[in-house]
Image (cartoon, rainbow, N blue to C red; front, side, top):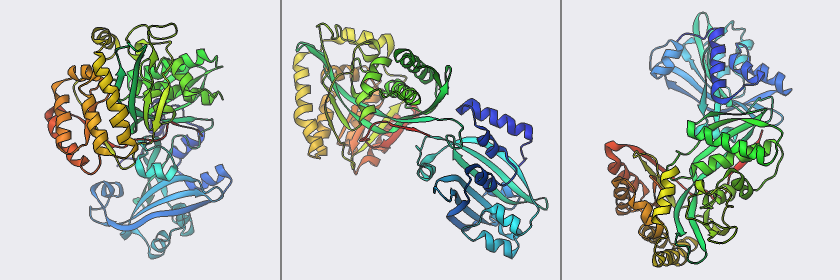
Length: 515
């Protein structure tokens, strides 16, 4: 394992900045220093640093640890996971994992190492061990569940990681990885938005005879979601994600900057987002996340309803906007149709700019013990753009008798099933909606694998299964049998590929925080 030269460390820092934006001087120092991190933290915070040991045990070195330490696989090493904390605020500053070969340790050094409250740098100093540090890696890693809990961040948030070895007598004495959030030790305010995606169960009325149109029901999802951070800039720049997502972020930010006459722009980093055009509402969540972040940066308090209108979302379905704002199970009341101030044609949200999001008629917590299985086959994107507009134009209005039955299913079976915690009633209503109204049109236009997935998941024990929006993502709702449903879905996907995610509903909206 070769150490990084000073030039190569500089290159790594520039690579990191290309991915997540400009690093502060302190962040660069923490990545590139060959001195004591504990001393640096104490100088930066003005407080002493304490150590909390999360885990310490003697293990056999796996091949990766053996290579880092130049020892044989299976050799005993002290594996130590600690948190470096600010002694005054209690804030976790650094998460560190170290591996030390026991056969290279003097007894006194080993005794101190096994104690839970001494930083490694101080142990080296106490025993007057002459050593040097060799940096071997610097990169961006996702937080994941453990680090998210440690630093109170989202599991998809980007973290800065650096690895180094302490060399004594020309042999690696300790191999260490240190990790901290990319928003920590920053020299300017960064706003991070964690926004949920959603299932769109069905549109309610695509007939319009009542003088209203659209309406819909949906469920806010805990995963996948959108995680985005922003900091002030004179212009608008976006990193991360795919080209479509970056375009949506930039477009929404420009619309908000112009619509609210903000004095500047922002530099955005998109850490995670749901797949575009898959039926999970990623367009709305990304646009609203960018809009909310920009407003927070410039101290503008604007409701999600108004932000959705500015960025051109919610012109057909209000589920995405309500999911961003409050989460849970949502029923929206659609739009006026054929009258002044209402919609004049059957059109999707993306082609309904200038139309305000519909009113939320009901919102209810989704049961915590119900699980949602999301399956997205690799069959191309769901209908969008001009094709989606054509489908609305061609297939609407749908038969009024189907609209009536659909509304009855939602009002008298789906919602009572939810409120009374009757999974079978809720699931059977979901199943029936797949053959009614505009949802029947959406299902009929899918690749044959979609129908096979819906059938297989119900047969495997799911209470109900449906197509989310225009797909191709399908979902199943259940409790104890969801692993069976996941296995059935995986079998149906076969060599065609796709993703299978077991998640749950989210009963709160987006989280917007500044740090």
